[in-house]
Image (tube, rainbow, N blue to C red; front, top):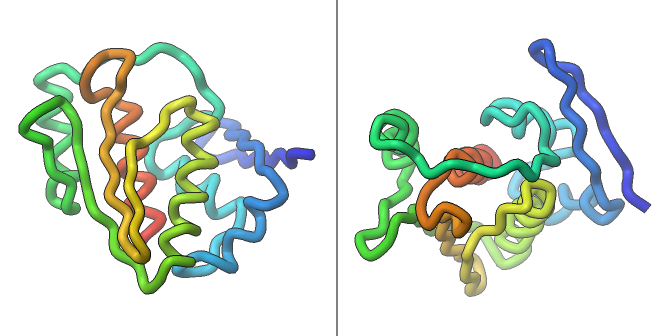
Length: 152
């Protein structure tokens, strides 16, 4: 059975559905986090709703300059062989790495936007690109910003 949490923030209602196992993620997390904090993090990176499945557009040149700059400063790299961004996250141990991946996976399911990633022990390598548009979209930017918030 899924639980739903609603939060009214900055004039908009945000709803996110949580599987009961997701509520225990704080045991695996780098820092304790609960479902309200997860929703608040989603709001901070620009989600007005977490369960959205609308079509997206490829980032324009102007959007790329504006939206990718903060991510590049945060350690993301633009891949040279395709229109994608990548970053490697390092954690204390496997449990923290897996907790991070689980949180991102829950959001990815709600967004219907899934990262490409690779995990070995305490490292998670992430690549983001929107296959629907064959390149980067605002979904990739939001997902990257969300990942960065989780590790702060």
